[in-house]
Image (cartoon, rainbow, N blue to C red; front, top):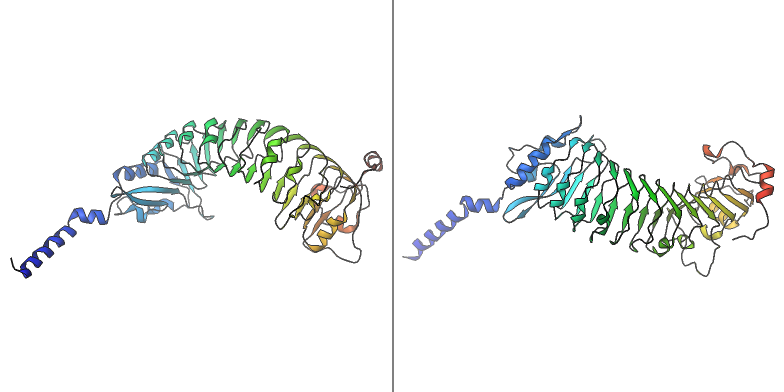
Length: 420
């Protein structure tokens, strides 16, 4: 065969191969039938709340749902398209979300790594079948009306990094093995009706949020040293703030407020790296530890907040909290004169909120010719002194209308004490 004919034949063969149905399928793979059928069932169990347009793009006659369906992310796996991420709803403020229930057919999306349900009115149980999705790294089903227990089967998802089931109506206790998952870093179960004692945590969590539930008992004796965020506020927890908290050197946010904790506050918690310390409305007692300049290597900065209000703290105000941007020491049993370092921080604008009302303080030194910055809020009402006018105008309504504490109370509580 001469060269021109051979070249023409070769071109024809290559053209035929490249344009064959098999080759076109390889170039433009379709969504797997299993995933497509699962999506149909998932859609059938949900509906848009009036005003929602989320499902308007879910047209099952479309040639490629992966490119046209809202909330879908796909990847080519074994020559076919598979759903790897599913977001149900948009999360936009102008979108009312979805209603209905979560279908067990979610478990047929076997390559799924992320499952997100945005705020809406979805009710019913969390499907136990989600445990079949062994590739799942993120489950976020927040701000709906899901009820029943947290499925124990979720404790088998060894690749899970983030589990957020907050702001639902879940009940029962936390499955014990859930907090043992080796790759779990973020666990958010806030604002449910969960009960029982707090579980021990053996995984290297970074973020643990269990606020606004019905947990009872004491804090676990130990927690992951990796924790940076811990909130168990608004539960029924009690007992002392144990030594386990002292070892959490990575913490930047700690909220134990609105429980029944008692006893002293561990000195290690007064650390500027722990920039948010919320211990209000407990039964904590003792004093704030003395300031030791030899141990202070940093200072509180912008955005810092310490709230120790509504406890039974005693003694004089320690200098250890100078520089905190928002400092709440009100409704305690603190005595003496407010250290000058706090008023200087107010004048410099470093401290923007200083609430000291409802204590037994006897004085504060303010510059008569220098105004506090307009951004500053100082409240001094109901102490054992006549507060300057500037110490009353910024008081919240909860401080009440009484300016002075009764003299007989002051004579009982104010006695000699060295300043911290």
